[in-house]
Length: 359
Image 1 (cartoon, rainbow, N blue to C red):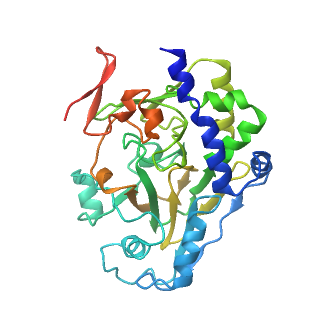
Image 2: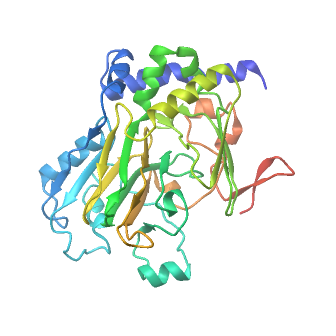
């Protein structure tokens, strides 16, 4: 690998700092250090009186929270027992926010034909149901470690919505950390470790199971095609194997990221779904989220059930894909052409030692 090419790729670290400072309204990275010293904050909800007709004030409050330091709008719907028009109330809500936040381009998901899911949940209505299937992480009731949505979607997921249809009896705290802010703090305290997180192979994520078994090599931090600071976080949920690039500087960066992405870490925000009609709308590019374990009393399997919807940055990314590319700013992505492979379905071939496009 040419050192000069890699050095040019790392030049985006300086641009990342400028963009993150502007986005957060900080004068210097030192302000981010102070922010991470603050205790975790329970997020204040936007109360929605009627999800079929959001008021101007409700829409404005959601936008303000979405673009705020936690990148997440937490809402509670008063009339959650009212029948939705679009199949699910989160779809009715998002349709009214098209001019406020990036929810114009819904990402399609392949229909899940599992017999168990159809029997339990009925027909598909445009959202993905998330519930305990007896697995681990997102499919179970144990801890779901911090991550960002859309592994294999090339960094194209702009917005995620998670809505509680059924809340658990206990646990299930969902927490949010602004990775751009955490990165600024690292730039202030350990500049070398900060820059190391921009290496093109800083983090390798391999799917353990399922098809396709994509292997993604990527920077943890980068400047995206919209000129925004973005991150790619996967901290090792079951189903994924994560490997970090060797080296002291990367290792220090890894330890910092893992420390600030623990449940209820300093500088984070959190919510606790306690009843139906509660949800969160999250800006995916700079925000990592996770969830603590949850459960129900006297039940073999928790009844907690969520509805989930993802929205893409543009119409081109609304179709499902599993590709090794990443929406890194073009001048940097061209230095490592694998980041330009953003179409189709790819699978890692162990014999070839590379991702191969299979459709």
